[in-house]
Length: 321
Figure 1 (cartoon, helix red, strand yellow):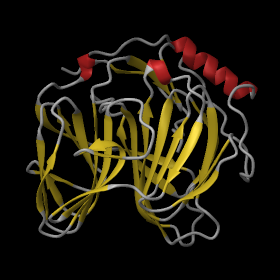
Figure 2 (tube, rainbow, N blue to C red; figure 1 turned 30 degrees about the vertical axis):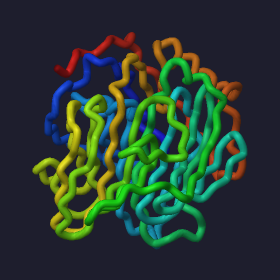
Figure 3 (cartoon, rainbow, N blue to C red; figure 1 turned 180 degrees about the vertical axis):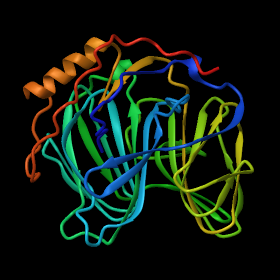
């Protein structure tokens, strides 16, 4: 999925100065963004005052949307560098195409993991015909400097491991949870897990105290460490936790996102993650010139043009606390 903002701002993210080193309960309010003709997303990261959670640098939640008589998701070819995209669905399907020639349909509880590395382009669309409902999340993981120029590649995993407790099934999407590891390739200590809670469930999820965490609510009524988290909102939890109390009034779906705090400061703009403004400028020129990111074949439509870069130099933002 792309950041389709035509007035995209340059942002400085990462660095331990942005991390809360103790347990907190910080509820993040989403920003509503239109994505294509019929899909509105709730953007949780980057957020005012909270840019990253571990290496997780971008989180969009969308749906559930009734797209029976709509085109559904239609994201034209666009570029990425310096990051991984994670596609995760609860309902519907998304057809992925990329400049490597990949063509895969991502279905609920399957991992679509694209590592952009030095450069890739891709498109995402609802298949034709498609299911009536669409509901999911799109996330980005920033690549550390040692791996941000790796060769691009795409992985599709249909069978993911689970951690099971009374009233709770946790599907490990990326990284490791409770000694259970996803087959998806990770480049930093990280975890992403889908949490399915049954009605009336009360559980305590084991955590790594060296990680910072957040929980995204996908559906239902749940409390995370005593805080009600409504669908489409995210609770930032800080660091220093060894377990996380969960409680569900109804069947509920959550996503646990966490990881070792990202040491490096990064520059994020549009669909690029770099280290300097020059990185971003060169990537934009490479996309507009057509000489870096390859081409996506088979999508019925033109590629996305890059927005204009901001006219003022990037300045590091202040620390959160």
